[in-house]
Image (cartoon, rainbow, N blue to C red; front, side, top):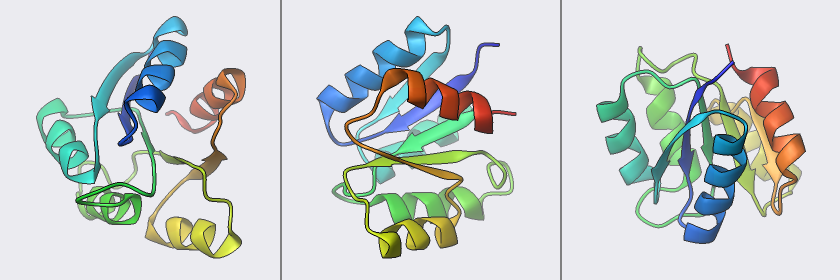
Length: 122
């Protein structure tokens, strides 16, 4: 089933890799360049099925973005997958505490990414 996925990453290359993998699987992709842009896209988009966000970004990092999403009654339950180069347990725990649903380490395998989206999507 097709889902609407918001991707938030400051790397244009990663955004394009995510877009390609997700659209090839039939999903609709919205993109944002950092957490601030992500909040703007989310406010204009209404409902999305899944959010995929990086952690290390300018203006608003992934932790701040996750916290913002979780503070919204509309998006409180939206699944959030963290896609990052970070793999330290403390950072994973911080993301989980902020409200992240899952964690994927870059570089990502498209098949595993799609499996994670299917697992968490309502």
